Image (cartoon, rainbow, N blue to C red):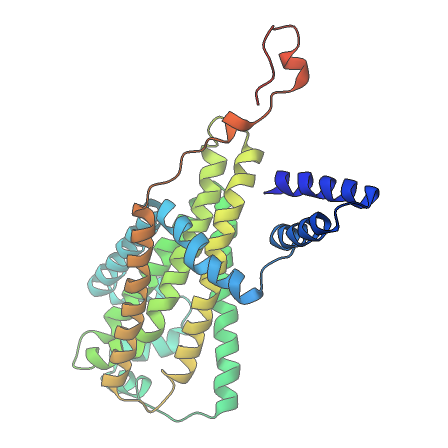
Length: 315
């Protein structure tokens, strides 16, 4: 289209210079205007967002599914390790959950009343919920960015962060899974944990993409490999941002509310259904045949390469 646009523009310029055939001038002017709009004017914001989530992102998710599986499996291994470590040695739970104050964690481990008070539904003002939501988003986003940025160090810090997140989650789950409060706890945890953990997986996958470009650049240089890996990695991080926002809103306005256990489990099921529906869409996109790259057939050879060889330049 770009080549045809240049040809028609030159033809329009020639017709205008001669001042002949006004019908052809009007036709070519309208044609060039439509082509210019298609080539140069960016689409509306809502169209770009729709194209990102319905076309660009599914292709990246399908291409990096194996890396996402590695991240998810490593997080699951950390989760199971945290459960086992806390069950065998409750004192080790403090090392697995450093983000929680030691005194409060000790009371949660030893006292059922403390766990019940922790899970108690309490009303909270809207302003406090808003501040809490912003703080949660900032913290979770910093974890995601750290998992992504440290991928440049061969992906090793990214893998460790994924394992450590699973380790802390497993130890924290063990604290609340020893009595009848386990269902209330899962209803407290799942609604915000599902989008939050998925966002962490996406950011960590983006970090592994960068790490793969550093460790195994292939036939290109590391710089060129990083340049190629930047686009899909940043798309995954961009997809994680709305998930972090949703997780922070749920954690502030659903978890810190008077909603029943059943409603909270329903919210978690709705989140799982939405993720599953999008995953089916990604799988359908991945099964579509990829058109062959035939650009090399129409790429013109440099003039100095074709001279003296007795062959004409490639069309």
